[in-house]
Length: 318
Image (cartoon, rainbow, N blue to C red; front, side, top):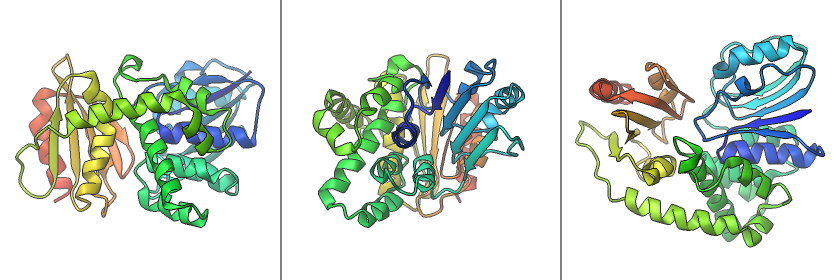
C-alpha cells in the first residue's frame, strides 16, 4: 500500500505530479482536501510498514500523527515549505523542508529531481504567488511570453480551486484535478485538452468580478483590509483576490476576511510582496492560525476579536 498525501492547492498538486512522473507507481491512495485541510496525516496514522509521500502540508501541524507513523516503521518522504519546528530524527523519515518565503514545495521537488519536470514546478510557483521566481525559471527554460502566461494561468486556476471551507465550495475535488493532470507529461497538453480548464476559467472570472466590487475597510496607513460575505464564491476567491491585491500594491500588507454562518471570520493574510515576513507569526497569535512567512491564515476568528486582529495586523506591518 502506498499513500500520496498532498495539499489541495496548485503547489501541492504540481509537487506530487512532478514526483510521480519521475517515480511512477501502479497505484497509490490519494489523501487531500481543501487548501486549509492540512492535518491530513491523522487519516493514516494507524498504518504500519508502508510508504507515504507528503507534499505541501506543515510538519508541525501533523507532528503527533507523523511521530506515530514513524513509530510504526512507515517510510515517509516529506516535501514542504511551511513552518516545521523541530524535524524528527528518524531513519524512516526523508525530509526536504525549507520555510524560506522565496520558495515553494513544487520548487523543492524540482530541485531534488534536477529540473526534469520544471514546467510543472513553474505552475506551482505561479499558484503560490511567487511570480518573480516562476518567471526566472521560465526564462531559463526558454519559454515564450505566451507559454509563460499559460503556465501562470494554470497555476493560478488550480490555486483558485483549492480555496473553500468544504469540498462542496470547490469546482473540483483536488484529488480529481490531480487525477486529470496525471496522464500529462507537460502542462501544455493538459491546457489544450482538459475540460476542467474551461470550468475553472469561467468560475474564476465570475468570482473575481464579484470580489472586485468589494470595498476596502477604512484603516490607518497603507495596509488594506477587505471583508467578504458568507457565500461560496467569496470562499473560493479569497486566495486569488488576496494575491491580486498584493501584486497591485506590493508595499502593502493585505488581510481578506470572509464571514461564516457561525458569526466568525476566516482570515487570509498576505505580507507585502516587497517585505515577505511575519504572516505566520501574526496568524499564530490566534488559536486556529498558521501558514508561512509570506502568506498565512486563521481558520476561525471570533467576530469579537476582529478589532484585536486588525490592530495587530496594522502593527506588524507598520
